[in-house]
Image 1 (cartoon, rainbow, N blue to C red):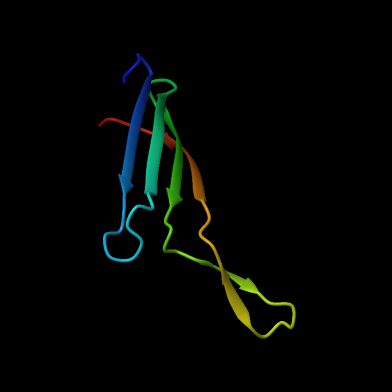
Image 2: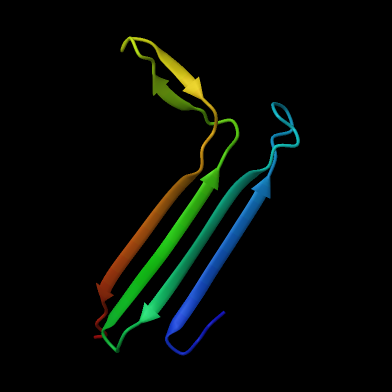
Length: 88
C-alpha cells in the first residue's frame, strides 16, 4: 500500500513444527512504515512481533542458584529511524 509520502510493508508468517508440537501455531509478523518528510529527510517506524512455542523463558528460582523454564512468551521489537538523503 503506497500513499504519496507513506509506504507500508506488512509480512505475516504462520507456521507449525511437524516434529515436536504439531498444531501449535508460531507467529512472525513484521510491519514497517516508511515516511518521506521532505526532499532530504526520511523516517522509518517498525514493529516486529514473534511467538515461538518451543522457545522457553528462563526464570530464576527463589534460592538464587537454580533456574527453571517458564512457557513461551510473545517477543516484541520496535524500531524507529531518521535519515538524511543527498543526491550527487
